[in-house]
Length: 305
View 1 (cartoon, rainbow, N blue to C red):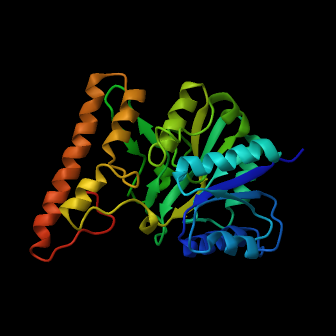
View 2: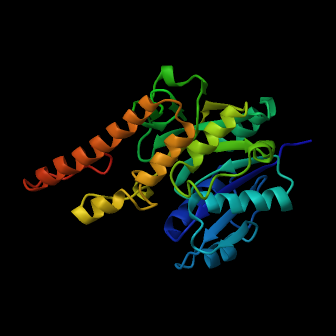
């Protein structure tokens, strides 16, 4: 019996990314929008107002298209798709994706070969590059030390090389290019869309899966590129936007979500020092670039501090 895979992602507006993202997927199969692929694609449109739902329905009639109310965010949108797959489809694996991801031409061929040899209890992750580059790595899964609190995306910003071409066991995964067997969801449940509706939804799920005995491994032959211009929340312009970055769900610096994440996964008071350091750098970075802007210097879009 052949393996069946469903690719899932959630959208909210940004139709131009979806148009390009779907084209990149179909290109891997040398297919057009009206063709039926050897994978299912399930998209949750979470309340788009730019015609995304109607455009997908017209141009990709074989896609399973679901509607959200605009308040699902990432975790809720993915959960809606996963629930639909578990109930209505007979896919074995669920492949997490984004509309701003571009796969290598042989991505799906490699994925099926890898899945045929893999234990269903293993979560398979991709090697992610920064779009627009050939060899700058965005990440190879992530690690979290529950005692020191160190939380990082492996190899982020580093130039690719032989030392990054080996499979790597990790603690958590980003929510794109990650393939999960349906039994994992049946065992540990869905993404926590209440505690982590946007950021940490993926890493929390990964850490819960690891605690339940599932391995998470990055396979370097699975290569994808991610467009960073479509990610996150900018806090550069004013003091008010900086303060908003500490509380909005669109920000990776949402204080409430960070504390909740550490409360759930940290095993030592010392771990919270890493959280303090993160905000010290965040505040310091804002002050530094606000000062430098007086002299006409601006933060690069890929700069973190």
